[in-house]
Length: 460
Length: 106
Image (cartoon, rainbow over all chains, first blue to last red; front, side, top):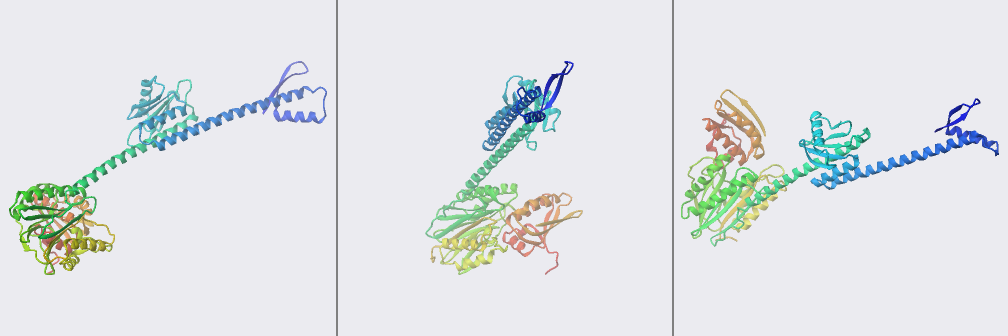
């Protein structure tokens, strides 16, 4: 801390001397040591002046520091506000506008432009020179495409790249009048603002993608529910036979199905499995259910082979195009005689439980969609006493336990034999329970479907 | 599932090892379908080490057979393991393929 004093030398010339504040204090202390003086020497007066000036300078510096500190706090609060907008207001143009407002205030810019794909889509601040500033921003980006921050127009314009890793091309440009250009001290703040804007936009993009994905998932769920609704909940009631039917898709929906029809004292049924998983299989499943119902109605009074041919005619072209097939068992029960006839196109398991034995009814033709115009063999038998027919799907027999062992046909056949004479519901529930118990929490890899048709004579 | 292919002038050999199920079908399709061409329209699939095959995988074999037949060729299934042979018979799909035994077993 220094001050100057001017005095006259012996010849009357002015001499300017620089005196440090601490030297002035030393001088005053030394004079004070001599006791009170009636007339303080000129050096003492000057030393006091030096100290006063030093104190004034200190006060002035303190004021400037306080002002800078307040300005710094203001910026900090503004950046905090910026961050808060970022977190609270994802995914709206209004939020982006708020951020640009804050950016304008923080940087002291006269105008801020937001550009998407080299076109101005939002502005804040002054509205004059908009076209000129837009042209400057676009030409600056084009000239320096890889830079994150570009300072041009004698430091009166700063153009930043937002979210450089994002899919969209977005920039923000700050402009100041020519008499108050940006300084190097402004750059860190502009970088921070660019970063905050980039993060917001990245969040917006993520949010938009999640919304789109959620919409697709909702549609998928809706389609799955609709597909699954093609399968009737209730099996037909009859005094001649007792029917249990249940399908449990491995996911929201699947390719397994059953359907029933009733006409002229007969109950028609079909149990099938579309090769494949999920919604694609389910779409074919709904078509298969419709094809079976149409064939039941169209061939009223006709034979099983004709019904099967009708189903095949309807489905084969679609299956051939899709490169998949459907295993299918189609049958009819004469309610007056309890005589059951069926054809099996590649489906399993199909078991006739009779006299406490469980005999598979083998497929006589490949699944529908593999080869056309094969005539299936019709198997017929009467359901009497404790007899019942079981038509399942491979999701039951192929269910694995934690050791990757399959439930298998033997285990199923054994359960079927043990369940003879029970109601169809008891048989069905028992089989599902045993398969669940066998899986012991191991997830189902395929849909599980079971239809049990038992004689009402001799059941318990 | 491990898919190993051998390419000969007029014939293709594919060895499969493991479980052949719906999860493996995309890999099988991308690896094997391009092998069937007008010049090499016969493809042998070695199924001796396939522990399990599900209906989706069977559909994939049928699809390949249709593609080969469209080129006047065929898919030949070699030495299917017992689980594969059983499922081919249960589904009546065995008749759709030529099945050969290369082991000379009775």
